[in-house]
Image 1: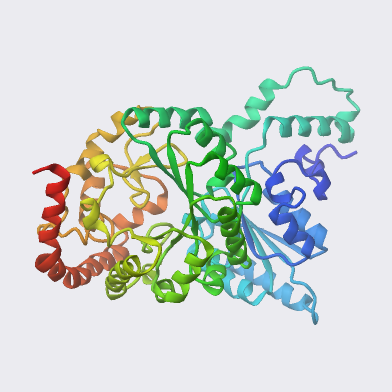
Image 2 (image 1 turned 90 degrees about the vertical axis):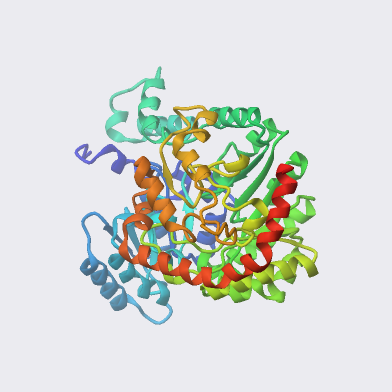
Length: 529
């Protein structure tokens, strides 16, 4: 008996039956379990707090599939170490042999160049990449690599899981077993093991408080986005409790089973918007192989359950033509979508790829195409930035009872795309946050443009200097380290400044010669002035 080996390593499970927790991924008929049992797994990213079993799960997958397993730590490994693994994989490749698994712990610590070095091998199927991270991969993993991986969220271990782990430790570990330990009280231990990670969660109680305060302010419409909202175990329960509120849920759709859809139908106060990038080719390239088919199944489940739903798409330079096509819109209508959202790709996240932004000309055509679809097809299309005139411009910072965002840490941001905050909802009431000087600065800066052009409403992509000035004035905290790139990165600053100049050339004449007069009429209707 070698008790010099850490207990966690001595007890590390070798097979699925011994693995505790994450039933939503590896339980019977769970999505990841199905992939593994098929023997054909994609590259993937495991996202979750420390200690939930990311490394262990990767090893179990390797054991189950009988694949070679290489492991690297992003903290201590570099490009040379990655290339050495690739060379070993090439030497072991024979005929139709399955590729080995490369596990990279703390993958978010890899630099852009280090992450770039993984692309070729992943694309060619030389290795199956499994990355583990405690940070949101949408912001910390480069887009080309993220698009080739499926992201799986690992949850905190629940109390029952921790108790089972304790009991197994006492029964199975030879050293502990020899001590004849009797477990009488474990609450203190559970608190110690769980507090470090759960402190960042928005608890059911906190969300309940937020919703009650929102209703006191007359807010009854809530948008829920991710991560993946359906991973939060309390989502449907909080919707049921607040049955007098309506929820728009932005989701990848992969967790909308028949049972989930049926419950949504019974609740009657939700309309999911399923993220899609185009047809199967475009969607699977961005979100992982097989995602498009699961989205189609989710739409069928929702339609059969009588749940209103729509799609949410992110037009980029690469997929905007597909998203505007009759073929795509007609497919969405056929599947049962009653609404569609276009959210233009914006440069947020870790070293965002500004080259993916739709060109000013493409954005201009999208505006006209959105209007055409609304006028000719049985679906309502919302074009988030181009429809600025209909809502009086930018609605961030709770302007006119408009939009604001509370992230997973409780930081209250003016907008989901403006990832800066001064206040945290855990420390202040909602009314005090949205009436704060920071939020008032965005409200009072409206209209951002000297000519009141509401076709250029955004403080990030249309008026970037406004965002820089306000963030600087209030010393606002970035939600993620990478959020500062839009403020400090010279390349991104230059791109955005040039982008808004070029777009203004296209839309300023439209505003001055037509829409400005119409907007004044709309404003009079709103304000009775």
